[in-house]
Length: 423
Image (cartoon, rainbow, N blue to C red; front, side, top):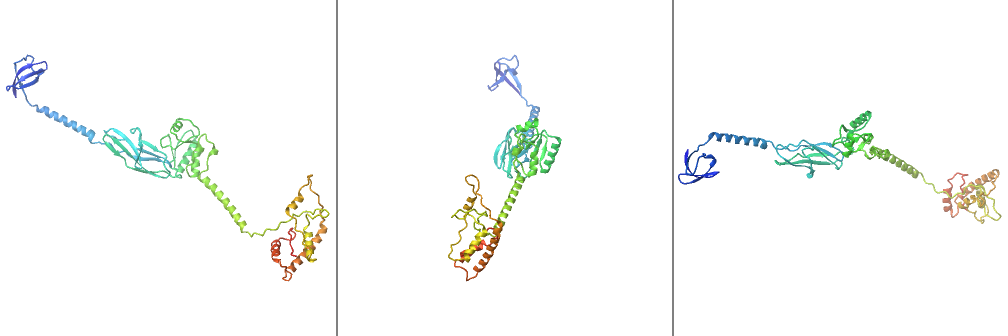
């Protein structure tokens, strides 16, 4: 289409064109010929460019498809959480690398039993974490929550349980300076108890075993606050069947500070209980024996002391005492009863040294003179007892004397027991 326009005014940047119906159109001066001035008439041809339109539409559609394929087809993946290692009081969790696709990361958080336990530092680099201070043989559930610019994604819940004290499969040992024989024996012991040995210090390393504190691995273990123990600690765990305390197995620890484990303690208790059982059995055996009535206080057999004129005898032979009792019974009834045996204190006082530190010498009676008298006294005493057992010769106070005589008559003859005869 051809259009004729009249130039009204030309400026440096814009020219004013007039149509036939006196309408003003602002037109760039650059697009007009160089020799145009006010009053000039110019013809402008306007046409549609279909080829350019098709090319523009094709370019736009290509851009839209590229945006869709980049940001609309692939989305971030939910994190995959799994258990790496478990001990009696700790759990080591790990997960696959975070796949954000084309989104940007906001945060990665760990939840325990439905509550937020904390945020993972450096989520794009960190792939594991250790949770300590857990209860023994307890069950826990964990899951991760990933927040991105493309949305929030949550992992599946992981249910895991801590070990019992007797479950040694969670022991993970990294070795340091050890002899080849010690290292081989250590590996065999770990295989027997279900533990494992790794070459380097990692987050799941529970103990560092060595005999000397040196080396890069030892420094890393100290930095990560991993217990550094001697190989005897693994032997103690195997012997006791449970986790042994590490305090007595440090490199510089005193072996005397090592405490008894479960097996040692049970054997100790078993020994103690056996001793107590034996003691109680002995006491029961003693209590089952018939209890004899207490014997009267006996005067120790000592040589008689020489009496002073008009004084009492402090000690007499048994044969003479029995003879006096029998004679007093066969004789007159009005005679006074024989004097009671001296108390034990007086007999002991008779053996005490004098002021000069020497005991008083007492004459020892001859054995030849006492034997006939003792035999005669025993015969008379037996005849007297037979007569007293008859009902007509039994005195009124026979009950008391019978009780005393029955308790005292159990002793053998010649043992020093005084057999009282009722008067």
